[in-house]
Image 1 (cartoon, rainbow, N blue to C red):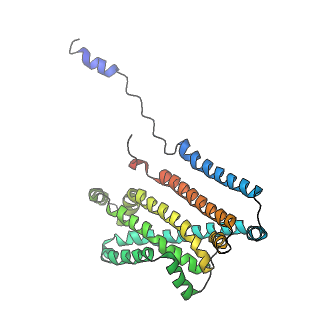
Image 2: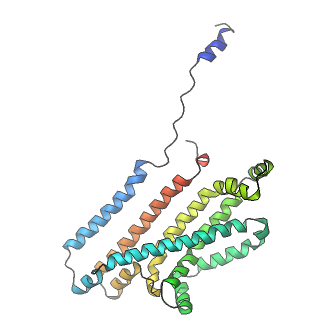
Image 3: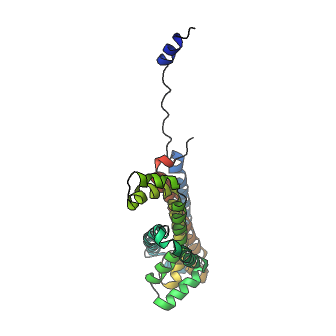
Length: 267
């Protein structure tokens, strides 16, 4: 082969086939856990259908009390998570700005106190202060779940490469533009991980709302314990665990779908 023929072969060589983008959500991710949870719920329903329940157990599970407790638990989780997000994410952004950077240790110490305090003790103090009801339960749940979102927001924003921020400012971006178009997108994975943790914490902590008159699935659990009725206790526990796993699954899907494509690892 002569030197003149080599460039011609290079020009006629076929380009490499384009690499297909990796799927974010696989079928196994979409189906395995929901099918497992449905199987658990179906097995529980079949067991209760053939079980010989005494009048006290039937009274505790009748008149829509199970669906009412489940709906209250979902409401407590959703509302508390909403307040956690509108408190922790803006606060985390503010604490990474130069004007409030010195206050960051104090804010983190307060958030750590909220989670370090035993949840039942915190709820008891709030009930003494605010009285029984949903309000005290929500404040306790929010205080307990702020830390993961706040700390992950701060960590995600601090982990950004300073050269990228300088480049954003160099092309004329305002501080707000750099925050919304560079800093926050880069911090999304860590923020979403904190939100996922807070969601699962809220589902678990919401079971304690019953001690403050906030309702939820904790009503079934405490009824089963105080009256020594295992079917009621088992049902409340299974529904709580199922709800926590379902919420974690939904949060994991959101974590995958909302992650910027540019941050995905190459495989």
